[in-house]
Amino acid sequence: MTKTTATAPLLDARALNRATLDRQLLLRRSPLSAREAVEHLLGLQAQNVKPPYYALAARLEGFAPGELSGLMDRRDVVRIVTMRSTIHTHTADDCLTLRPLVQAARDRELGAFRKGLVGVDLDRLAVLARDLVETEPRTMKQLREALLTEWPDADPQALAIAARCRLPLVQVTPRGLWGRSGQVALTTAEHWLGRPARPAPAPDATVLRYLAAFGPASVKDMQTWAGLTRLRDAFERLRPRLLTFRDENGVELFDLPDAPRPDPGTPAPPRFLPEFDNLLLSHADRTRVVPPAYWGRTWQGNQAHSTLLVDGFLAGVWRLEETALVVEPFGRLSRPQRDEVTAEGERMLRVMHPDTSYDIRFGAVVRR
Image (cartoon, rainbow, N blue to C red; front, side):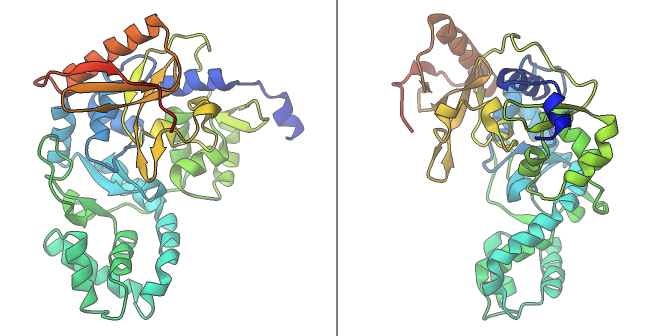
């Protein structure tokens, strides 16, 4: 810890929690539109179809699934691999800027597949793949079969991954639409949106947006969110415009001067979040949301569980069964907390499943 960091104001886990929840639209529901929220949050994790819808239901006042589905159908938002090599739902504008920003990470990702790509001209592969998917949207299976005719000795999966890494491939609708969806078929972002991608931007503007949505945060926090390295220079360029703090471990945190940093005692209502919500994935140190005792308990193998926040922190998991919303807390909830969780669950069900009747059941405390 430098002398400057040692004298910076301290933000403990609870202070960081409330600041982050406020920027994540989780302290109170926001009147933002779905498009405005997707833009503010720099996208929503979308490994599965439904999580972006639940993510917005937890954050927005007056949200209905049809709002996001309509944006996707009109190509105002798209599903594309960006941060951390995972699928995100982004606005069209962010798709065309954030994807070039993280292209270096996609290029590095190809290193894991180099044995299956011996003898493959990656520039030619990108040209062929672009022609294929812009002629007609293709599934990954169709894409690798078509590329295999050009490079029969290559690994088929590696060929398709190379196309996904070299090109900004979006999932075309009806994939991602609420209540419809469909198999994954891909075309380029430029073809789907009818305009060219922009040159890779300097990261400075994205640093400011990241802090607005996830701050206060360290350099490593943003690198974790983006799946990038070497962002220190951008933070240093911006230092004169930012405030600095330190966390309980002495790590330097950066923040926007006018960003909200609520009192740590500010109430935080319960929230039902989907699996893979970016709130839990976008910091190197997740203790601002995940108590150390619960680390790893939202995962089982490669599958993430939908999560419950109580008093702003991870407190359990939940799932929808055929006739019930099952809530499994990790620890004991007080009677007022159970009542608040029940009320929030009822609200979530009204928003997301207005035509289906569910009971709310508290399951046994589980150890995961």
